[in-house]
Image (cartoon, rainbow, N blue to C red; front, side, top):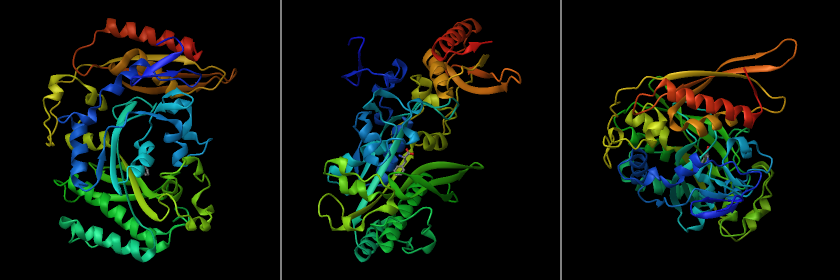
Length: 431
Ligand code: PHE
């Protein structure tokens, strides 16, 4: 490995001006928490796989993907904001650590399975608090049916009826309230077929959360209209848990361009929004264009934190026996916190540079210097000088270890390093 290359998951890549992966992040790619049988993330993965017992599980994809897989193949346009460098971990201009398991949808379709699950670690640059960590895990699900109003409705009904334990739940296949101009059914889909698939999707996710939360029979679920470039219509599913609506997953009807592209060179993907589709494309006879499917993507940390009572997302990465020994394959138990060690708070304030300022870049530096000892970063002051128009901000950094007392001395050393790195890399003026 030379200065100009970087090794990720055993492969060398040429660095360029997009490269922003850090050693701290790269060290996570080998952990594979979702594959350790007695780890909470893996226990939830297995529960979902058991629930969708007839789906093909795909768990072994490496987190290194091309930007084409993460974005282009999913109809995410070249200028879409989710591509920005400050939200993603790029290996170089054309390779990255996947930001979602949807990056493997096409591979799933090409595996030949008509229903499959994909789990894996995903990477996003983000803020720092007890529920955000730059690496987390997702479970993707996808199922498709033969297209055509009659055939789809019948298949969907038969499929639901065949799920023995759910037979008592009849699903209403046609629900006019599902059609909203701002969350449209795709032109390529007959409304009756799309509605049958939407009903199947909602039924499938409802029964999944009911199975996961079988000790909470009154769990409330709601569906919020959403937008994803790769599904239409789209929703976010939320559950009401301990007084709060929690987003559990994103989902929707798979963009037909994706089904068309499966097995064909993916450059044929149509980037236009669904409503602009050419219905003549229905006449095409290759790929999966006569199939219609749904997809979902769930965050596994979110579900695990709720089901195991795990209060801080950093705990999932702990190698401390006091954490790991509490869990056993197949079991959901409540986490017993070991005593919380005292925090150490440090403030940092600085004048922002003239050029563009991005908070994620700041958080990334704090993560890079302090690692998992940083618990929270919160902006506590933000003011613009009335005369000079210069803007000054102050952040409070909470340092706390999960497994030991930290000394003021060691935190001072870390804070000093944070200060000098921020000053150097972000050209701010420390105060
Ligand atoms: N990939 C989306 C996300 O990470 C979730 C999603 C998956 C939405 C599949 C629709 C279909 O937010």
